[in-house]
Amino acid sequence: MKLLITGGAGFIGSNFILFMLEHHPDYDIINLDKLTYAGNLENLVSAAGSRHYTFIRGDIADAKLVHDILDTRVDAVINFAAESHVDRSILEPAAFITTNILGTQILLDCAREKRVGRFIQISTDEVYGSLGPSGRFSETTCLHPNSPYSASKASADMIAHAYYETFGMPVMITRTSNNYGPYQFPEKLLPLAVTNLLEDRPVPIYGDGMNVRDWIFVTDNAEAIDLVLHKGKEGEVYNIGAGYESTNKALIDSVLRLMGKPESLITYVKDRPGHDRRYAIDPSKIINELGWSPRTSLDQGLKATIDWYSTHRAWWDRIKSGEYLAYYEKNYAVKGLKGY
Ligand code: NAD
Ligand code: TYD
Image (cartoon, rainbow, N blue to C red; front, side, top):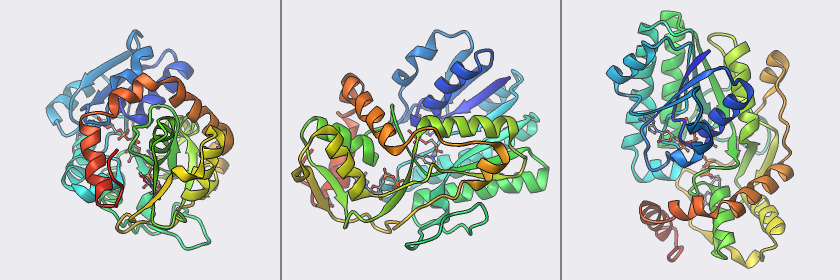
């Protein structure tokens, strides 16, 4: 099989490429990535030498480039490329609309024209909006996105689905809960907390810390996407979640315990505007229909993640400078956290 993976230099995309090269060593993988602040080729140094892996720097919205790539007889497109951070979407929404909506539509058009056999749109549980204290998101839950990020992802989902209904395109959508693991950019809660704690810096918790997220180790998500690629049914949505719900406060408490750091390093800061209270995924469909199940417990995954960031300091040291500091200042100064 020959795969076009977009956004493969980001967190989940790079983990997925490494997973696929290991589990399908005869597949050819093209990684198309614009290398925004979140794209990092260091994530893929172990893939770079493989004759089955090619990197192309470019934009999913560049139709000419995408056409040229698809002309090399690609069997499937897996679209990870996106602006992915909610807080950035609150500060500057424009890029989210351009890449997540327009970019996806252009990619769909190209794939349609070249009659690509499978198209997987990588989406998020955030498109469903916020839950009360009980219940879980199923694939039929109404979409109710609340942030510019989730609204842009929901739009892309609906366009992708429309291409299935209207043009008979072989589209599938995965909606995953919060991923964590190696190579995650340290603007997201877990890598931000772990790397700050490794430097004995405070961990900012938004609001009362009682917002709930449903955590999945990134390799378990990669395995689920691999299953959807091979066994998924065209036109279907698959929720992917491991069932590890936690409040942000409880999650950070576990990290503090595992790292042997004091609770005094938690700093409560002003809440995120429009902050969704609770996400929880019902993954029964992918479990029952495709035979997926998560392998990594939250405790195992947290230990592995802390271990990875502890032993890959050079990776995040290089990131936590320049643009990162400017963003950190912009996001956290208004929330009342002084300095990095
Ligand atoms: P990320 O921000 O780490 O990586 C995104 C990648 O896309 C980067 O390498 C970036 O350079 C690239 N990119 C951005 N704009 C592009 C463009 N116009 N053309 C080509 N490449 C471009 O994101 P991630 O956390 O790896 O998320 C990957 C996908 O999974 C996204 O679609 C996101 O919405 C979705 N998702 C993420 C999570 C999560 O917890 N991280 C959960 C559910 C769904
Ligand atoms: P995040 O990692 O940004 O993922 P998402 O918003 O897509 O779920 O945030 C996870 C949760 O952690 C979310 O409820 C917001 C909260 N959070 C903090 O409390 N402090 C932080 O510094 C960050 C980045 C997030």
